Image 1 (cartoon, one colour):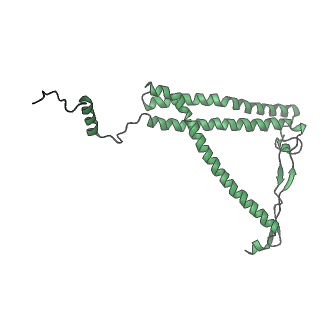
Image 2 (cartoon, one colour; image 1 turned 90 degrees about the vertical axis):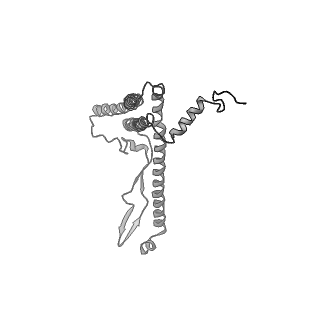
Image 3 (cartoon, rainbow, N blue to C red; image 1 turned 90 degrees about the horizontal axis):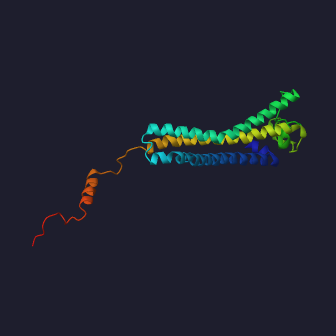
Length: 227
């Protein structure tokens, strides 16, 4: 309590802002998790498209055959979805290697913000001086802005490399997530599509329905009418 009383209004505002950011981060993580779950369900259902016809037409009649067929279709679809992001990743890496070889600078930092790195087009802050100890108390300060977005001709390689890594990497991860979602769906369908269940089954009721279907008119038993 004494610590709070010793803080200035500026320090209290900073602590409050940090708490708000902390809460928002947790809320954001929760929404991202929910979104990933929903997306994976949608991605998994794409497996139904490639395996539905053989199952419905009874070309596939057992679990083992289904898993073998579905796995082959699943990986084939993954390769189809992932070859473009892999090409993007390889292109970005090749650009960096060629640049380093020409300049003979294999220690090149692609994230540097001093003229040659991707950091030149980002907002960057220095957080090292945010918390300082003075006497028996702590002094809180806002982080210092050390770079504002601007383009540098010498940083062209970092722009291509980092952009390629981000676009190709995210695209590839989505394709990989789709593969995992379809795999989960595959094992789930391998059980539900061929399972036999007696849930709600009653033998006597089934027999009664069969008898009723064979003799739809109960009064017509084949005997002669009596006077």
